[in-house]
Amino acid sequence: MNDQLSAPSRSSWPIALVIALLACAGLIVGIKQLHRTADTTPVSAPVPVHLGKLTASTTDTRLHRVPIDHDQRMAPNGTVVHPRHTTALFDSPSGHPFAKVRPKEFGPTWLPVIAHAGGWLRVLLPSRPDGSTGWLQASKVRSATTPYQIQVHLATRTLDLFKDDNEIGTWSVAVGAPSTPTPTGRTFLLGQLVDDNQTFSPVILPLGTHSRTLDSFGGGPGTVAIHGWTDPSVFGQAVSHGCIRVPADALDRLRLIPLGTPVLITRT
View 1: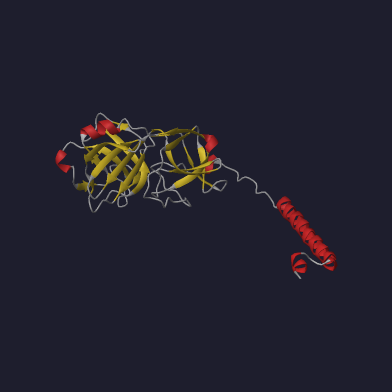
View 2: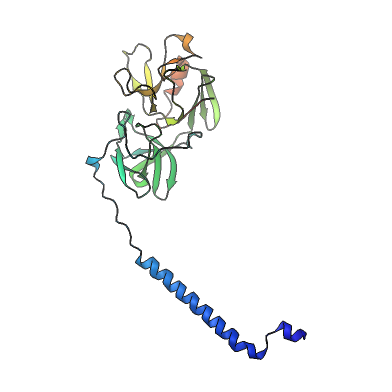
């Protein structure tokens, strides 16, 4: 009785053999079908790029059908890229071109990377709407790393400067008034403007973000910036049109920070 349980009877071998052969045949057919499906799947042709028809992503422009950055709580990791020449921006890796980015705006254009996929990089952009992003080909850009990060806290009205995740400076600053608040989210140092005729600040550091309440200010597109201020009584107050006013020693430190450095503005 035990021998009958531990091994199939002699008469059952033909049946088992037939079942095994059928299973193998089914597997082979399945594999052939898989290869046939893969071989006959059409490969989409690259979307042609006409740079002359694309809107340049600048602080003055508003983009349409642009992917928006929804992860606003964490600063990028410090990887920044500079387009070697005017380069198309895509709505996804190998997707459709919707805009372009140029090598220069306020000096060289450096953009923080927030994601990557194969040979594609997703970067923050300086255009409206705030949080605009785009994908570009890694082969079209020069890459670098900034060890710095700037954090602005609206509730406490302070600015913290970090290097390699270590705080190296903190200052009391002025932020936007309730009617013209400083926008929150992650952005970056877009450029540096030096104007000796400017009375309130010798250096202005435009960011890649804009006022949510002002379409324009002072003849510009409402770009939010970090800059100095002549009256120190404003520091610690919510009184600006959205810009971040900093003391002179803070401005001296911040003007040395590389372009593209991430800036995280929080409500806390």
